[in-house]
Length: 424
Image (cartoon, rainbow, N blue to C red; front, side, top):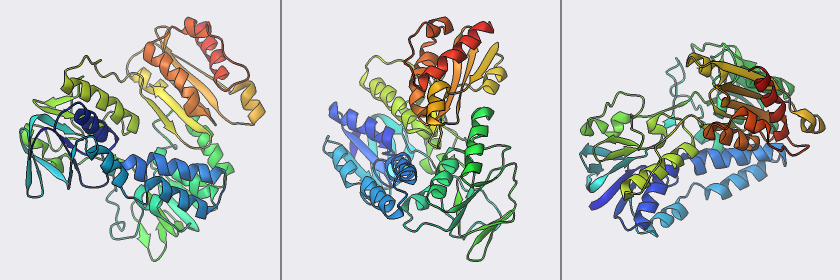
């Protein structure tokens, strides 16, 4: 098959690129070995947030199972596949491997692209080589999302965003939950103050948390036992990985042993090769892949495009309360040698009204915010104004000059800004 562009991976970013290029009149082959739409709509963002919502509201497992199946079309991608082919794209089922410049093999089929290849293959759950783990019926997020039976007890190995979200969800439905994390705190990539709030919430929910825990072995005899903790199920949530060797990127001069594909500010990885999303290593977020996709589309179509920027990357951990963060943490800012000012405040009047635990932490340098965190029931929504402030480098004094609606959660930002201004 000869086309203009081959898109390897039809997750959110790949599907967006492939569909928009096809609509623009290019001949596009979209290659996907799993489901068109990728991780997010079937095993990630969408079903997991439905599960979290049902744990907070109905607390009815049967309702949860029904809603997840509705949202995922029972893991059938016909709607997404038809959406792409309806735009004129060619969907090729199977795992693609680059075999040379402008050439991809899918099984025995050879695809050739005159304009180039877009690598948008995403990532997969990373399972550590722990003694005794292989061969056991452990879960990744895939099995946890597809599961129809509420476990009586579950161990969650990994206290990052995926681990803590699903841990709190299972606890909300009544499972006995233990979280085992190797770092010295949960959500260790976020501010320590945020970790403390979540750990307190977990304690209040009866979730056992073991941090600083090194796991040498997993025992399984019908139940799982790790570090003296026993449960019916084990969810491995220890991060995600990219397999560049399976993609054959060495055929276009890239390092197949690398952890990610290096790209320039317009997402170019090599001559006639672009990469986006998880494989680029700038954050395994759906919104990152969509951000990259927009740059790639404009670059291929020859339209004006703003170079990629990463100083204001937003992220949300959808626990209760939510942890919304953007930009640098205080530690990261200090590691970069910035002249850092940091301040933390509570959620103010709205927090008191809602009886909500949480905080706002702001990190500033040279009179502008370089990082911000809001831990609150709507922490991800308060994040919108903080992301704009970091992205646009709005001066602290200008932020203080704003009118903040009362009584809202976002009003809690202003006292912290004033503390930063006072600190110089």
